[in-house]
Length: 177
Image (cartoon, rainbow, N blue to C red; front, side):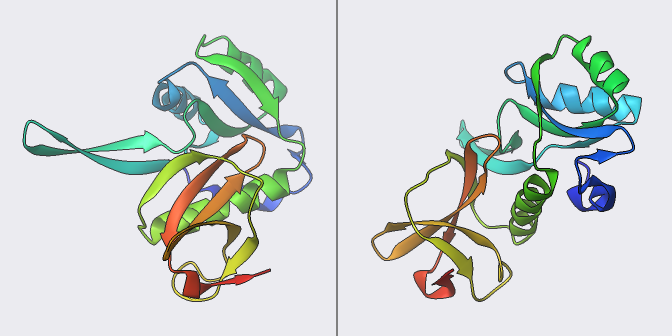
């Protein structure tokens, strides 16, 4: 996985010379293979993943799975985009209208994953308060909150995909924005 922070400086206006940010909508379960193609061609890519631990016959099996199944983030020249479409792994490409916002959202998720909370993909939601984390390693992170009794769940949205990531957090650690 490539760190999204490395290629942010030139991404502000959506293009870096002629490069454009895209979200590649890929065929089911081909995210890692698509990343391998991008890597082999030397193209910038970002695939947020989470660690899923399951029990199989009394053994714990750890797997890295995409946080946003079916999507890979990349920055390509037009001819590079055509070359990737020829791999037959991509269903279609989504041009990112506001790269700064998407990069900010991906940075929040990347920062949150370094704190190693329990993460899992969820559907994005519009209901709830916009909040900011006040304390701990996620301080300054903004997201929407869902309350579940004494627990709270912070949802970090990636609006272009209509998806989000849930993180368990104490309600005392957040404030309304």
